[in-house]
Length: 162
Image 1 (cartoon, rainbow, N blue to C red):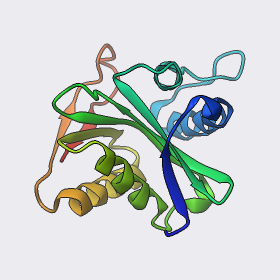
Image 2: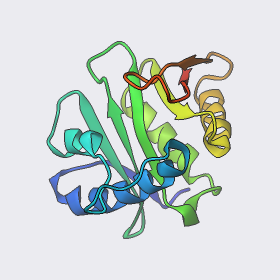
Image 3: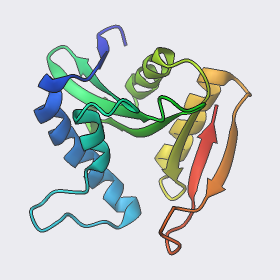
Image 4: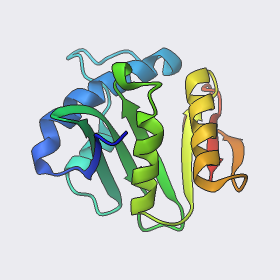
């Protein structure tokens, strides 16, 4: 993906990130069962953490040419392990290596241990994140199920550490 640009999000990216965020949350609603709020929005605490410059968060925007094609939000920047908290690629760019390349670029910006969570019912995410872990760390990764904090009725998240 020589034309993929992965760059740190800045204040000028607010509108693009807000629009991509709605697509991301809509995609996840299939697996989490969350409906939009009455105004058509979804919860956006993570987005606000990135946009408001929280020092424990970093946002990245992905472009091909002038077109935004995705984003990643990283949290726990001051912790021993970084957490890839949100990751999104627009549908037309999926299954072309864009996601894997973007993750590799983001991970390279923050050396050290990483974790990422996803829902086991999202078979595409299961395959993708296992492939990412292997591409980044070979066989030096692990997988476990952890309860969703504050929501005992939701199936546990799958966490991959690498």
